[in-house]
Image (cartoon, rainbow, N blue to C red; front, side, top):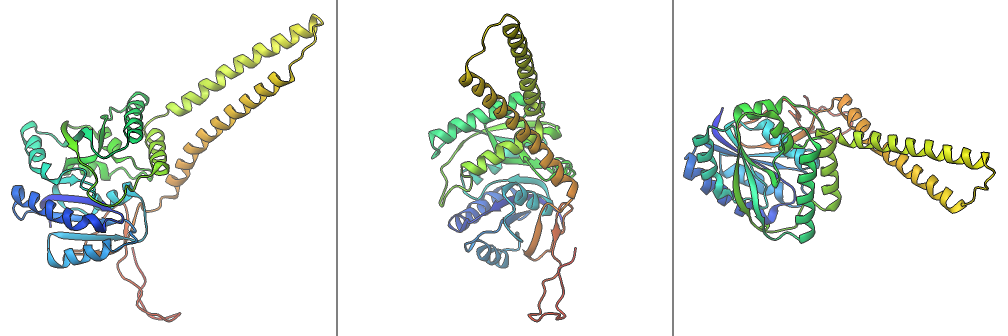
Length: 339
């Protein structure tokens, strides 16, 4: 059964934020939608009591749907699961840490209506509570991505956005494994308008995006929306080839004129530089080949272990376990999860 608004929130170890998140989201949604909304909470393999809290919320509020993934799939795939299982005519994407204020729902809906937009995306004017290093790297990453891709991906934006159902339907028709959702939404087109806001500090807990995950996320974005790294590799190979030809000409000239060629250190330096560039090029090619390998396998994007709520859901991009084995004996008659 469809509703006027779905609010989709991926959660990983967010027990400290969940109660406040639910309270503020419920208040914001009721103020603009009445009872015509749903909150889809996706538990991405949390190790704390996040899932238990989700089940309690779903048991007491019929508008809450709890989705428990079979393991930690990562933020983008957890978000994909929530988007695939939601039923709203409009969809708000928001993180659980309350850095993006839920109270902006009303103004964003009004912007969508007045400008007849399919997507209203949040643009961060300020980023409270973040280190200078993170602000600087984020600033540089978004501008590098904007220059490297053919798609106009807005700078200083996250996944915080409001989407129409038709925009979401197009997004769900894109089944790639390595997902950079803000870039995929930009690729869709339609009318997309910015919504400037000030980002708050994290309400509680720790960031779920350490440096290693940020680097992985950046690689997914670059390789998913640009062939520029491959072009960079080919350009580097071309110039190194030209340099090698010039070096060969110099060696031949020195031999012909009887000049002794010295400089073992400089020779080894050239060998090391060439070897490093070759390894760099191979690494770039390996990154793209790895993406092809993952896509060819055609595995579901996510696996749902359990859904808490009064209405069960099925999606198109993942698999929902229909039954849980109940037998504790080998060879027992418990039902196995089915597609």
